[in-house]
Every structure is written in C-alpha cells, then in structure tokens.
Length: 68
Length: 176
Image (cartoon, rainbow over all chains, first blue to last red; front, side):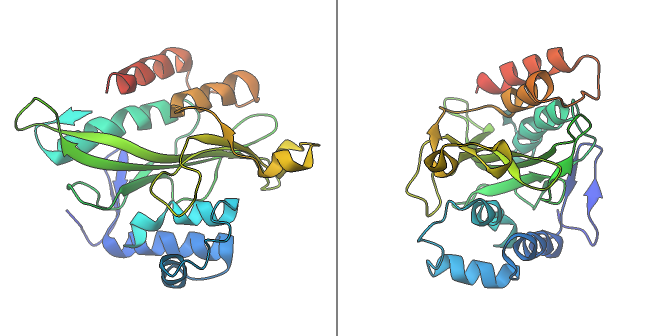
C-alpha cells in the first residue's frame, strides 16, 4: 500500500508512513512549537492532561494516528 | 459504508466525504495508510492538516480531521464497514483565529466525551466563560457544517449543485 511518494487517486491522497509522520510533525510545530515525536511522547506521558481541550492541543492530538 | 474488503469499505467511506468537500474546496483528503482493521483509530484530514482557505467574504479557512475504525459489517459475512469514531471540523477567520470548532473525541484524554461545539476567539463572544465552554450538540455531520458555511457564513460554493450533493452524501452517511 505504501509507496515512495504520496499518490492521489483523484479523490484521496495516500501518504506513506514517513509522510504521515511528517504531517503530524509539521502541525505539531505549527500549533505547539514542538516536533511530532516530542508531542507524542508528552501526550502519552499525560503532560497535556491539565487541559487537553485547548484548541491548539486538540488539533494536533487528533492527528496522532498519523504519527503512530 | 461497507465493502467486500476493508480497503473498499474505506473507499466507500471517504468518497462521499471528498464529494461533499468538493462543494467548498478542491483540497484533497489525506489518509495515512488506514485501510486495515486495528485497535487504534485511523485518521484522515483535509489537505495536510493546515486550515484550507475557502472562497467567500470573509475568506474563512476549514479544517477537517476524522477518526474511523474498520469493523466487520454486522450480519453480512465477509463484508467490512467503516465507523466514524471522532471528528474535528473547524472554521478560522482570515487572521487565523478559530471561529467555531465541532469536536467529538471520545477516545482521547479529554473528560468531555460527547460531541460539542467550541466558539473560538474569532467568534468574538462577549461572555467570558462561553469561550471555554463545550456546547453539547449531538453528533454533527460534516455536511451540516459545510452547509452552515455556505448558507450562513459567506462561503462561496464551488459547484452549483452543492445543496443536492450535501443532501445526498449526508443521507448516504446516515444510513450507516
């Protein structure tokens, strides 16, 4: 299923694992100023649990499946 | 949405979404390899996860993230279907401030498990507590948000048949 580059079938774009992780990384940097790996580590450690509903946190958290 | 294979089920799930989104944007849905049954949710997003600028006055930007799971279709041996298990639909103003955001994230770390609406800084709500409130909504279809954007928030549709398309895709989704 994964290919070297993203392929678009005219309706959806199927990202490679690397591209999916890059997507998470990009958005984590955009909204939280940290890389995707750092966000995943902190999220799993509960470091955002004081207020996980903050818009910037939720936007990145919803993209977690791209980084796992 | 069902299919003989899990990949077909995902395609059947995503196709109406992409069609609905074509009413307001030419941005493409991105999937990160989520074609197989798994314990963890899969996700898709509009574009690369950054807000997608829409045409209109003011020019709002749309973010869409959906979580889904692939399961056996009940009572139909050999068929797979996709369940939506979370979403984020958000509209931002031209300054990047969130106007409104529909959330449903029952599998995350939040204590708020029901579908809800946030009114962001871009909504310019005067009541302080309201800006942090989780306004209960019930499950909200993406089509309903797109319809709101076109009918009430000044977003210009990209196709003349937007109303019929949204009606059709929402009806198809609600059958599941």
